[in-house]
Image (cartoon, rainbow, N blue to C red; front, side, top):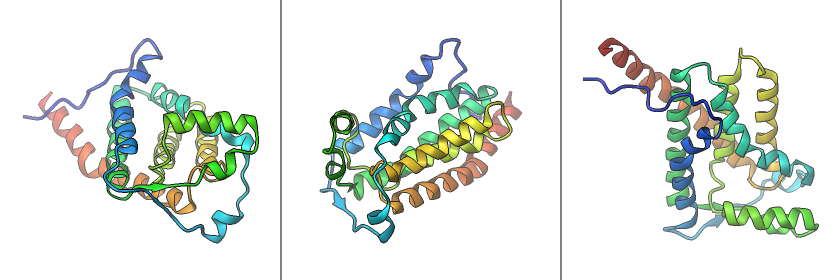
Length: 210
C-alpha cells in the first residue's frame, strides 16, 4: 500500500509557510549548536582571499528567510509544494551529515567588526546561526533548487535573480568558502536525482492507489 504523497497543503495564510519550516529549522539549529567534533576552519583559496567583503549585500543574504517561504507560496499546486518540502528536507539531511561529522566554521568576526551595522548583523547571526555549518552551503543548495522550480513561472526573473544574488552573497558577505558554494551546488544536483529516483516513483505509486 502506497503512502499518500501529499503531506502539506497550500494554506490561505502566508505565515503558515513559516510553520512548515519549523522541523527543518530545529534540525538545522541542533546540528549547528550541539557538536560531536570541534569545528575546522579551512584554508583560504586564492579566490577566497581576494574576493571583497561587500557589506551592502548582507540584507540580501538575510532575505533568504523570506525568499524560502515565497518560493513555497509560488508553487503551482500541492504536489509541487510537497516536491519542495521533501527536497529541501533531503538537502538538509545530506548537509546535516557534514554538519555533525565534519563541522566547518568561517572566521566571520574578522570581517564584521568594522562598522556598527555589520557588528549588529554579526551579533544577530551568531545568535541565530552559529558558524559551524559552512560546508556544504545549505543556502546555495536551497536557492539553486528554488531557481530550478521558478523557471517558466510568473516572476521567474525576479526569483532567479534573487536566488542567484543570495548564492553570490554567501561568499561576498564572508559567510562561506568557495568550496562550500560548490558543495552546495552538488547537493542541489543530488536532490534532483533523488526526485527522479525516489519522489517521482512514489508519486506514481500513490496516484495508482488513489
